Every structure is written in C-alpha cells, then in structure tokens.
Length: 399
Image 1 (cartoon, helix red, strand yellow):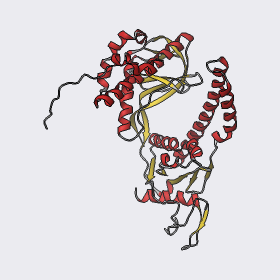
Image 2 (cartoon, one colour):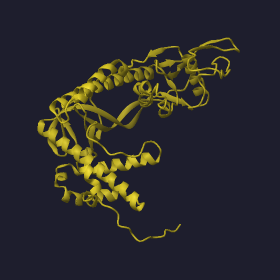
Image 3 (spheres, one colour):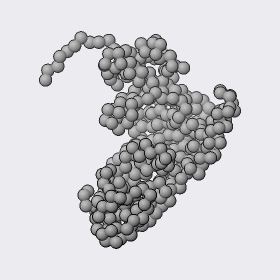
Image 4 (cartoon, one colour):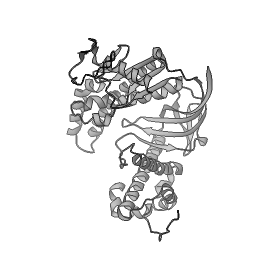
C-alpha cells in the first residue's frame, strides 16, 4: 500500500561554467565568505566588549550600507549575501544546542559554496541552469531526472576545481506504508573497524579501508607539496594532485556506504544499531584514524533517510548498553571480557560466541524489546559591519 508524501529532496549535479561564469561563481563564493567572516567578527566583538548579541536581522539590515563601502558586493546576488548571515545564525543555534562546535572563520582552501534561496527564479531547460546573475545559463548534466518545484540552489566548488549544484526540490513521492516491526524481518548491526559491519545473521562485511590503502601515496604527495616554493605554479600543481587523491578516497568511501546502506534497507524491514559516541572514541589515538575514516556516522544517517523512503524502520539502543559482554543465549554478563577477546565461552550455558555476532544479536534483541514585565535599558550603540570594516581587527579578514 502506497500513499502520497510531500518532502524536500536534494539532487546534486555537475555543472560546467564558462571562464566568465567561473569568475562570477568565484566572486559569489568569495563575497559570501567575506560577509560570513565579517559578521562573525562583529558578533564576537559585540559580545566580548559589551556582552550583547547582534541578531541576524540587524546584520542583514546593515548590508545595503556595507555595499556603499564595498562596491564589488553589488556584482553578487543580494539574496546569497543575506543567506551567509542566516547560515551564521544557524551555526550559533547549533552551537548553543550542543550539536556543533563554536562557529569558525571560513578559509578559501576547502570546498566553497554559496546558496541561492529564491528557487522560484531558477530554471533548467535545454541543458542549462538559469538563476539570478547567470542569465546566459550554466551547462548542467542531468543524470537523474527530478519532479517538483525547486526551492533553493547551492553552487559549490571543490578543491580540485570542479563545480556542482545541489537542488532542494519540494516533491511528491509514492511512499509505501510503514512496515511493522517483526523479529523475522529485523537485523542487528554491529559497527567495527576490521569488519565494517557484522550482522545478527552472522554476515561480516570487511572494511575496505580506502584511506589506509592510499596512505603511503598520500604521504608521498604531501612531502612533494611541502618542498615546492610558496605561490609558485609547481606548488599549485602539487596541491591539485594532493586534492585529487583526497577526492578519490572520499568518492570511494561514499560509493561503498551508499551501496551497502541501500542493500540493507531494501532487504530488511527494521535495522537495529548501537548509538555510538564517536567523538569520545576518537580520543583513543591508536584507533582514531581508522574510526574517522570508516564513516560510521554517515552510514547510519544514510540508512535513516533511505528507510524513510522505503517505509522501513531504524532503531538505536542506548550508548552504554553492554551489548558485547552479554550472552545472547542466557543473558549472563561476562565482566572479564577484554578488547583482545574475539571469541568467548559463556560459563553458564557453554555457548561459544563470536564477539561481534553476539553484539549484533544483543543489539537486535534489545531494540525489539525496548524500543513579566521588562525593564527597558538605555539603548547601547552596537558594532556595525561598516564600523568593523574600519577597525584594525578586520585587517586579517580583508587579506
């Protein structure tokens, strides 16, 4: 049984701008980064000196005056500049909720992007993407058709110089009715370093370890890059080679995670995971690199949103539930179990357990079982974007 379900869905496509369009895209990216950093400096300065918060709307209202001081900002879509301030406000919201670290200044050496929030002015026709400031149209390759209304676009540039556009589409999908949670159609999944996943059915999927396999080549490229003279053409070429290798590893990892998550969601009605505190696990410096390169968090998120598409379920047990040390047969807890013990014999029921398979079974079993008046003060003159532009503390931003 299916029902119509409205949702926002993102589609990412490769675009091929001309030289002039590339320069305009880069100008948009640089301007949005400038506004973000300037707004962050103003908010930090206001709080440090006056213990005051400057709202998102106050900063957006100052942009027209800032354009009189920085005429080159007039070449950029005004909505994209406003979106940079909104993004900063969202970053602070995530920080105060405890979901992210304190907002940092953006640099030009990572993946750069700018967002166009008015999707109503965006069109795609005859292999061209049309949006404000790009009236000539940017060549785009549509490898997967979409249906629905475009709500916003985000154009990004990778460190290797490739350009992409992400379309946020308000679409209707035929979503199947949510599957019932049953034991025979559920699967427990234990995430690991050696085996990327071990299931309650005893299936083990090896970790491809894309980073570890390319580590020696990455070190070689990094050494070659460090030997090049700064600002020379050879250094730029070596930087490109290094970025291409990192991009290759990231694409390999993403491809593996997509294929595995899709396979699991399609073949099982309920996926059961353990809630992992990855940030705490990274404090183990011997395993930090292996854990970070595995992409456990991305994998679980992929399973969650794909489960929504197919009407499936994703369950997660609490972090400190001792899934590994409990015998899945009789419930005995083996407190003496160490990380080096890959197999262990239960002293109560004499069952020989594979450590990871036993953990996956326990994850599945636990998941299925439990699842006035305001005093008005005299207004204080707060810092402004234009004022910040004239201060010495902004010199670093403008460089």
